[in-house]
Length: 384
Image 1: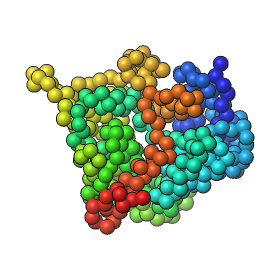
Image 2: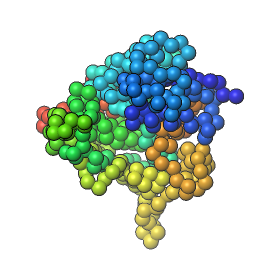
Image 3: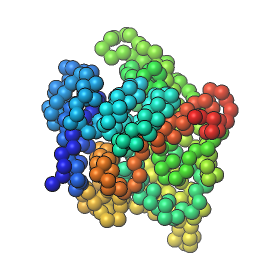
Image 4: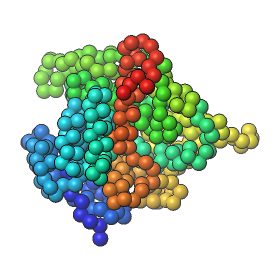
């Protein structure tokens, strides 16, 4: 029988729902040595907290997240809050000896991320582990792409093209913490470029070495405040950030993120071009990976791989029969399974990002903003 493993979650909004769902269903689909027990949910919305806890099966609820650090029974804390409080909450939990899974980006600022990575390194000496919710790594198609690159199917990577385009952030979108720099740190950049920088680093297996140039733009400067007719608040984050980069092995790369691309609802995509082949992935068709390998021109071209076959594609065997497709929520559940495997000393199918890993992505984000604002190339060696 799996050992009961009490966890806590801080945050009850979008990510609170996604994470609660993952923890509550993970052992229904994966055979694991640890059984998550939904011990405590903490959030600021006192009115909505109790109904949320009942709906998702949390045994306890509190508006004081610091109580979690003092609860000896809790072994892992999941931080699903806005970026500006990641540092305080994660450090408190690490100091209390609890494993921490934190939402992305690691923090709203490089200095906060640096402190978190340092605290995680110190805690690791006591056996405490950290994780970051870069959940797109857990799409079967992306995990398969990782394995194909490691098998040498593409050869040396020459070029990476990555995009994350959404359309929900227009001028009619109400104010939220995501549009406030003091809370979010950045806009589309930290929200979306963080995912594709992580995915590119994950797939290529190298670090970004230089940002050659970048553009940062804010198009929407005011947004309506929900519940206050006619009142608007200042939106002071980027709406678009695009940049060019190089990887340490010489591959060139382009990254672009926006929440103002009409018609692109969640267009998270990446293409890798190598000496022997190319692959491409787009989340709006997330069960599919496309592969093109050098060969006979008569039979060449892009191959469409349906990544739903158990035994052939990562994570697929936990779910449904071939081509009975999975969706957004399943990446979180796949990651929850790998977190629990790791904490039971079982190696996951593909690597999980920890605070040290996510800090490298944060360095790239910082370098891109510096390049945009100072209008010159930035070597990653300058970003400590």
